[in-house]
Length: 626
Ligand SMILES: [Zn+2]
Image (cartoon, rainbow, N blue to C red; front, top):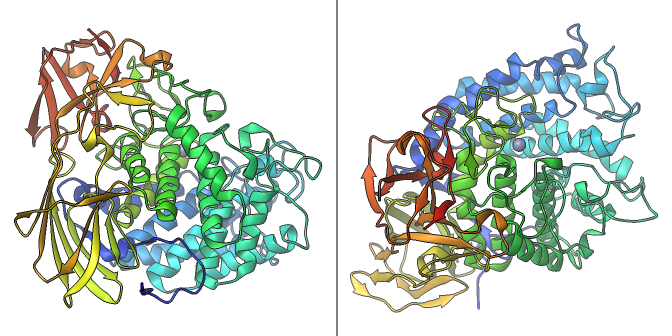
């Protein structure tokens, strides 16, 4: 009989993630990025919110300063997202100055909130011009484009994070006052409506987790169930995934970030509530994305037009949208799918997005960002970018930088998870963790040079000898399968030799759901050594992907590579790679922050995420195959 480890107040995901606060990252790859997040990205994005009047909008809304609303109707959300990310940073390292800064921002937000809980600076600032087709002339009158509910979703997420970080209820009280108003307007006693841009659903679930107030969970579900209800509402169409009831959807369509947030929220509601059909729908949509609409980098959203998914196999490289926000949404969704189903394949997709399509969105300096993440570039074209095809300091629509702020510190929370007497190791990231398995506290020390090396050493320290199953993810790439579909395949699909030692002895582990399952009684000091083969591998796309016809890409471990002009005689777009060319991995500690580069046949390939750190120039992931 299994023992529930923690008293849970309500039904929840069957698998429980180990929170990022219990996982200390100490490796050479992520640790510097987390430090940069804390030291650079958080203060930098806070300063940008000040300079661009995103903060000033709250001051004006409170009537404490003169002036009209500045920027877009969703600028409020950036302030909330930075507070969320800053709160995560505070949870792992105290910073009184930052905490005081958040207190100050929260006071401004509180002052801008109207007496009945309404909060939306675009409308509150006296003298601002309201447009019928943007903010709407009245409250809640143009939910398709107003982003009133979208902004609030980010407020609610920030409130939950700030409470967890500081124990202070200041932002939570603002959020709950707002949620009470939204509930009275759109709850069972109110009208049936759906936001144009999903996000409030995720935020409501977070408030529900904090308060246990089931009305908030039901409201999240109601917003989702309102979509696609012909005859009940005026529908927004495919752009906002509002063409069909969510339980009837099978294909990923429309704006990719909205979609990713919606699928994540559907997973939450499927886990926490009675929501017949939700799980089947996101299972079908996941198959559609992973089988037809996923970039090799883990990016989603093929089209600039409407920032949307394309048709099946429509995956252009130069005009790929693959927004940084969409990669993060894909990560959030796949993490939730893993927590629902316990299969490694979801973490395969998460890992692919994380190391490639997401990480390319932020420079190693932590203060330059890509909005779109194409898989080839002529070095000139760049959407939403200020100067050439390089990362930008900021954007007028700055959703991507402010998602980086909250995504980066969340990473340690994707590494481990538990279910009853199983301990899952989902990602290979060096560091220490404290995990409760059954009734036993288990210390874990993971040592690895991942993603450059496939040697992973895990030392366990249970507080008492305990039997449980340690489940180590066997990445698809290590067994000849780049993605859990036929969308991409290795030219040589042979699986490499995976080796597993327990206390120095070879161990034959069953593979369960894509995890190596090691069940035994664990003692303090037990050591598991996993070797994942990391040969250089060539990837081909499904024949139906026209953009990749006659082309080959290169991977090693979880890393997708690209050619950049600066390394290859000034060009990348015309380069050909012969099947016979030997590419040799070279660990180069002083190159691009420390990478394994691949060299051979006159070519140099670098990790895709590291491109565009040396000025604008051509870049290509898919090379001509010769
Ligand atoms: Zn974005």
